[in-house]
Amino acid sequence: MCRGGRTSYDYRTAQNRGSDTGDAFYQRQSMLIALYPQKWLPYRYLHPFLWNHWDSGAALQRIAATDGLKPQVLLLPATRDEVVPSEEIEKLASICAEARLSTRRVDVLGALHTEATIRREGQQAVADFVRDVCKGSQSKRDRPVCT
Image 1 (cartoon, rainbow, N blue to C red):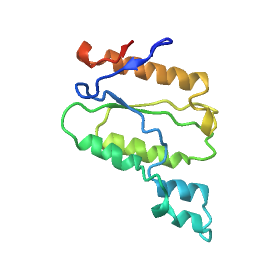
Image 2: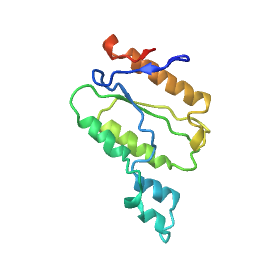
Image 3: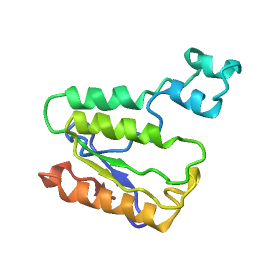
Image 4: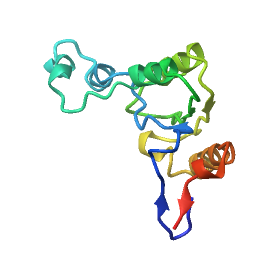
């Protein structure tokens, strides 16, 4: 990361070296079921009407199906997550394993849902991941440059 600087990155000539789905849920429908487990509540059935249809499982499968260099994946679950059930991260880890994606998983012990990247272990895991991904770039041209 750049200390006090901005990162410029030419997306046209570089390949994605690392990935964070930004979402610990396998699918949006999984999120609604986790938040509203009661079958009599209508919310769990409203997934087609959500504005966000991001599907982390499908995205990982698409990445695995592409030709060329595959990005590394960081899974950073909070062990006391009160929002995302642990089964969701297991589903994503399973997809990564089946697709043979290079995956790093760091469980942030004792962290609640919003604390995974706030706690020191989570920050260190993200920093180490970014550092290792940047070191793994094959050419200087592919690395982010601080300006």
